[in-house]
Image (tube, rainbow, N blue to C red; front, side, top):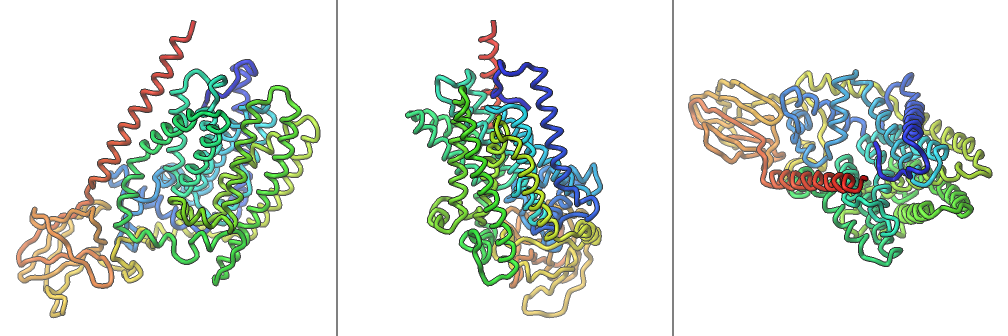
Length: 576
């Protein structure tokens, strides 16, 4: 992993490789230390553990069925399914499923965390090496890999997707800075800077949507400030181009997720207790469990703010004492702005922004802005350690503070290694697991669905009742995205499929497209059949919005390759 941020006069290739190797070792060691309790206590079963584990198992099962990119979650809602994978970004559930093919399932959560946090340390190292020594950058890598917010996610939240997105945040800042460099300091190959930014920005969105929203607002702040500092609109134009390319790369996911929200109960994502107004720092509502966790998250946020502030002051003093500190000063100002923005958005006076800024309310929890604050935290600590005077003090101080935080979180966490085996058993028994409120198809109330239902159930021809007709049912194929069966009966009847109706499903009876009915209290798919043998085919089709999103992503990918190629050609032409 290399970016055109290294000064070739400061270190040769061998020293650079050695620095990256050290960064890998430090980041890996820190991430292993962060999950050390997993080795004797099992998995930390946080708020979202079951959601992510169920998604990994579902995706792994669909890969065995030959479905490479799942869209429908087959085992959600006890086998009735839901379109979860249309709305939830793909990188985390694909990584978790892939790890499940290599390692025992109970080891996957810990390995996922190690991968994410090792990558987090390397990304912070890349950012810090822009202006700091290897020693300082290595310390920053360790601090970021084990930062307080990451520990809160690991032990209390188990939001693996957000953890993966947070790992990339330092690279977002780094690539934005490269894209916004003033003309006199700008590297010669701007197309590559645009391409690098677009890839990293798109990767954050493909990890976690709330993190994508926060990254979008963060880079907008940086682009706006760069335009003011440079007294030019060029940073805004370059930023707009990079953002357009980044969003283009994500269109295969983002466009369907935006368009098909009307097909699900997406408003449930902002139900009581999940709204920003309920989750500002130290907010209390009529829910004791919510209040306990919000107090815990708020305390971690205050700790992060205080440490970032103190380290930021020390870093500024160190930068002021250096001669060649132009880049360091610019980066310090950028991170100071991000720190201020993240801090303000976590407290109640910022509610006006949460109410009016587009999509900001879908971040849900204001304390999530610790994901942004953690980047200045890691860099400022790295810069403070790089100081010649009193730099040694930060190591013991950080170890004591983070060690105390980790100890408290480990004791507060819920430890349970039976979550994944229970999910595996439920799938093996053809029963499935609970669904998700916000991904429930419109018109459905998944709480009314039976937990144990047959794949096909014969019903009377009339809803008013009557005797249940006799019928012979033969299921020929039953996968996540295709159901083929035949029903033979001497009288009219209805059949209820263990499947929730959704506009993407294409239903045919004897080769003719039909519109299915649904139950009164939920969206279970029901078909009315005539006497005789009826062949039923149900397929999850590719809707027009998904086709358009894929086309846009392909065009964006070709543009990305063109930019990289242009940079390479310019590099060759500039060579003696």
